[in-house]
Image (cartoon, rainbow, N blue to C red; front, side, top):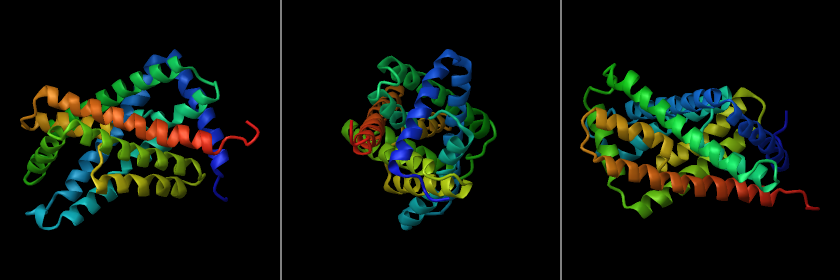
Length: 262
């Protein structure tokens, strides 16, 4: 089957957004779907550490580390898209065309984002505690040290750097969601998710839901990250992700591919 056109993808996003807005009437279902997505992204994060940082001296081959991490991390978005979970960063873009068309209200958008962000955080936190900390999955060297070093680096970034990297991350994540909507086959959707997400990981951008896993889990494993530094990273990554997804994908594509008689 040929790929859907940008106009068809736009209409799909509007239909999906109205369903997402209606989930506010079923808060436990919305929370469950959001926790699923948080756990899926955390799974991708854990896999990216295991695959990308398992070298005696990763500094000697940084491009290989980035490549392997980038090629394994996207499983989280693939699972989210295929299995219908609710991801805050994806919803940044998905809700905007419907909002611009008047199909959902600003209150609908805000409620969805707040609820899904919270559920994503809880899902990522539980995955980190139950399947990483409690199981000792990343306790061995060099995985524990690599996760801690990466998390400490993230937490020490200047706020503007985190913001700008957050824009880049969710621009690519939401483009991945858009590409996945262009296809009907499993292979097409997987490929659509994989390439842009791998790009953002390789480039070192900041994804707030991924950081909901990396930072708290690193703290559980002994990282010396003050709580304010963790929350500031999540704050500025979240703001950047909203700009990258809502403005540069949702709003831009709603404007660029709107019916010409509007």
